Image 1 (tube, rainbow, N blue to C red):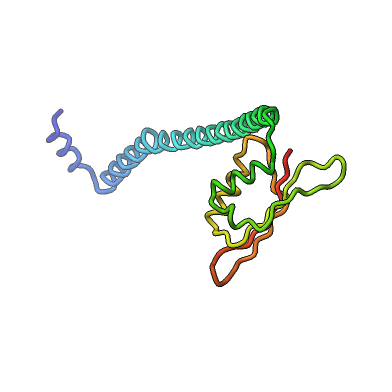
Image 2: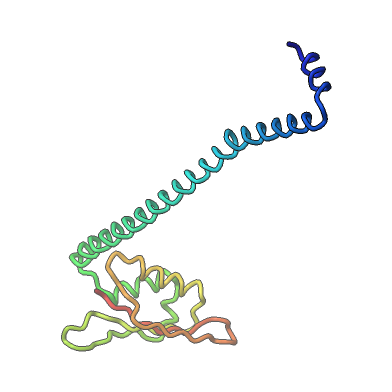
Length: 172
């Protein structure tokens, strides 16, 4: 049968039968659309969401392992640094020279405590700019020997827009 015969048969049907036929055709098209296009897209999206969650968990594990490795490297470097005769006082003096703040150091003094006290030095610098302070703190943080800043006191000097800084660095 060709298309003209189908159209003639369709025209011979009553209005109600034509509506049922059209409704069935629309239903069939919608059903095929949902089954073969919409459902696979929804399933694909769910699979991608699960894959993203799994990759995020893996990334978190990578970050944890990276932190552990860098901590182990730091401990290893600390051991090597201690063997070369590292002195906190000398390190802070060199760092201040590198950051061009050595002439503004008001004082740098060792802090003594009890018999089990770790080596520590207190430093006071007048008129340091924020960039220089950040450089100093970064230098302390990235030192191969483990150092900690125990105290940090900042006071802004209004007239020069710089800082007076007092901090205590602990070795070990």
